[in-house]
Image (cartoon, rainbow, N blue to C red; front, top):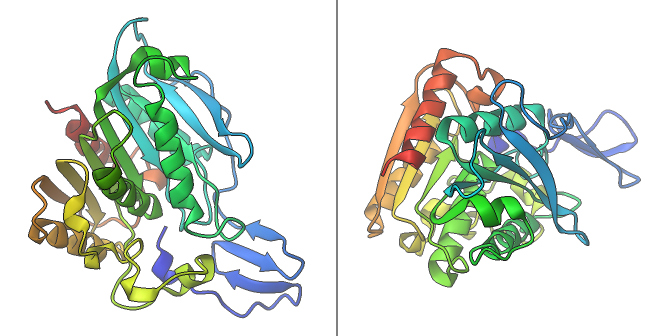
Length: 310
């Protein structure tokens, strides 16, 4: 989701206090109406891939949860790579339960033969930024409870190789993934190491204040805010993994932001390997909207190759 193209406008409807075109309306009575990302699909066994999925509650008090995916024909004792995925949506729309994300996770789980944890963090503006970061970190700590095989979720106890863990995310979710990798680099991940992160069409702040972020983030500090404007972060070299893959799209307004992140990471002194790949002729998160296209399939293949290479 391209945050920088969505500035709050003066609404025509007198009952609406603020409107972010194509994303959401904030009514004067406090009600929030989301204009995209509201459709949901239930978990189960996917007829296309035979991947199994289920929903788990991480924190019943806040509603923090996740959708888990287990690839087909997984023997009871087989240990697999874990992909911890963070969805996009401008910090304010979409969930892991949306059909597009559900299909994408089924595909990644099947093609890469990995267990997936797709986190459902709370959305702004009801839960303003930085709650999305806090929720995601709490979910990471919940996953870490399974390192010894004694956590609350059997799929993670029985089937995850905690020696092979990756983060993935798109748009705002890619921003969160970066911040989680950075936090883990200083605090640790609770008993496991992060092998790498995949940032698809990543959102990072540019050289000016982001007006949408300003609406969703009461304590936003502008261009010096390292969470949002991560390419300017002097601590970027502390990223807690040794491999990064950045996937950008030629027609995406955020393409240059991804390229700047690539250059900033390379020049930071970070001792890992970062690669960037551009898909020609495509726009922001195109693979979610048209997953059967040749270019979408090629992008998924690059994602899979990155998390399966030894």
